[in-house]
Length: 454
Image (tube, rainbow, N blue to C red):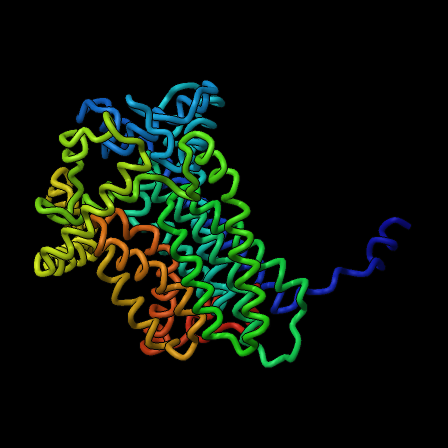
């Protein structure tokens, strides 16, 4: 009886091609994320070993890292958020020190634990690149972008470094991912997109942008620029204006607690820090080389007689005076900083080993060429280009004014992976066509952004 019942029971319907493709994409994504996570954990272990047994120091790039770690320790102990004497209370944004403080609270005052935590958190950049590529172009593009991100040597090596760039990249990607649907809705020919959906994505974009600013304050200038581009590219200008207002309002409201705190501790309101002046002068002064050299700050000793706010204003004015008096040298510095930013290998003297230079060049130059090729292929899709190219160009422009290095380019390389993936797909389509054995089409964009052509 049971045998008859079993034999007569209906078999589950066979899965459609669409379902099989989606399962294939998910399986590949899990493998890619797992590989990227493993490589970043290995990088954290290797970095800690090198620091302890070979270089005999606490940080790979000292200076900023020391300050972030001390601020994290103070937050973990419940002490005031300040550094040095006289105290500087509006020197750094609190986002990265908060992550360090969380590591210290959970795992103790161990830098290796913080590096492992960063390696895990920064692995989120891999699925975010997948999401960006999938929603902007196709699931295949997303997978390739995720794969390129997972194995990128410099991104792997920098993930456990106790600096802001990798964590910021994850938050920046999150804000870009929230902005993707806005472009689709506002470029649509439909008369009235659902305003609730538009408002939700606008608020999320503003909030995620604010979280990114809490880690890297210079991103605050990118958000109004993004809103301007949104207005220029949208078919529905009224709705785009509504979105822009919501994005900026959400950004300001999310940063407002920090601004009010700064007003309370310093007597002056700012949504970021009072470190812009010294940073600007670092890049624009008679001894500037394009690299960071903050020895002037200790030499001048202005903190002994001025407040943080006054020191910030003093160095802003001094930098602008330098530009007025030395326009030729200023332009020369712009060229030097531009070259340092796009240098395929690290500029710092501790990374001059030929192996490091060759490895980083072999990783970056093909990526850049593929991205240029991919950008040409999708040159008509202006929204895709804004979200993938604008970040790296924004930081290039910014660091042609401030000091410049490969380090500041790294966050912009994450969204660029999408264009590189499109370039790789285009090359594959030109040379070989499709990959019939994997079920993943390397040539044509899929009709469904969530899981390939159905």
